Length: 494
Image 1 (cartoon, rainbow, N blue to C red):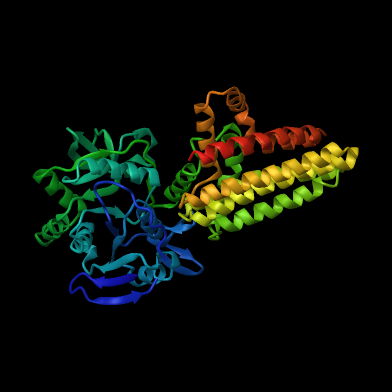
Image 2 (cartoon, helix red, strand yellow; image 1 turned 180 degrees about the vertical axis):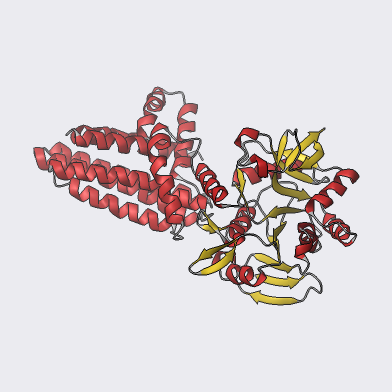
């Protein structure tokens, strides 16, 4: 539900029925389910389809800044949002109310009539609505989900003190001149400001406040505090404000076009997994992340990408099955391109917070079937060119074994009850292979590298181009048998 409230009398001025994005919550002893987001100032306006919009409605990575702030916090367990609006209230409420993904979330628009007196006044208007522990952030800041999770984990250890998320990796801070610097002492803020000559941390624009602090902050505003800095300064003098240093923090505020560009660059960094192999990291991701960023501008569904990659691969397999060298080469090129694009569905899901149980299952099933279809096409090509029955029977084994593996993996992913990728299932297989000490598993462990999809796709492309597609078929034949055995054993133990 989206609601707009007046901070003075609390009357509801606008109500729009709007789907929960993701019910997954951060499982911690401390539940932080409330957030105040400041969006009241006279920020920059930009042109979109001939209409000038406030900066908080600027699209970064396919989502409007304010929309991204809400969705990101929702990913770590926040359910109730208090968005303070002022200068562009009508436009912000109007645009945000039309975003289907925000429907059924408890999003409250709190009007602050005196927003021009200082951002502390806006903060007080939002904080006055909250009695439970809450976050405070600005609508023009982006954070990666691991960064938010790390901050939640930190404040959970000290739930009774307010805290500021801080970045200690100073060389990585973009536009240090504009950043708010922090001097820490004994784990708390000693000094804070933009003009500090010496400092050890940088303010990331994300605060935590314990239960009952909402009313304390509202009182400070009533007593004359005009800026967030004024309020924080008073809290520093009273109880102290912790400096929660977030490890490997990935964040960015967006104040101008160069910062927008940097924000999207950093969002792309979140799409690259630490578990990526050499091929994915150095070749595939270079192209897929840029493609995903482009597709995000059109609100492309991850499942639409999965579907396209599936049928694109089937077309390549159709060409390969002819047995003609040129068609085999073109089909292999199609398969390699599809392998690169295959990363886009997961990247879009992470970039736009669109991960789903069905999407994970659909990706797992189609990924496995398209590989099996292509391997079978190689076998058919071998049969067409040699007439040998061994290719006929081997192709049947590849098809049956591959479909069986696809079924096992698909069932496992579905039964997990949440988004789970092929990569995560493969990781489980690897762990089981390492745990088992028999000779077969030791041999399989040494071969696991070439079974990875990015490696096998590149190897297939190279071998087909140089005319050794039959070699690739027999490698795939052995790989399918190994996969069927190891995945069945590993998944059954999970």
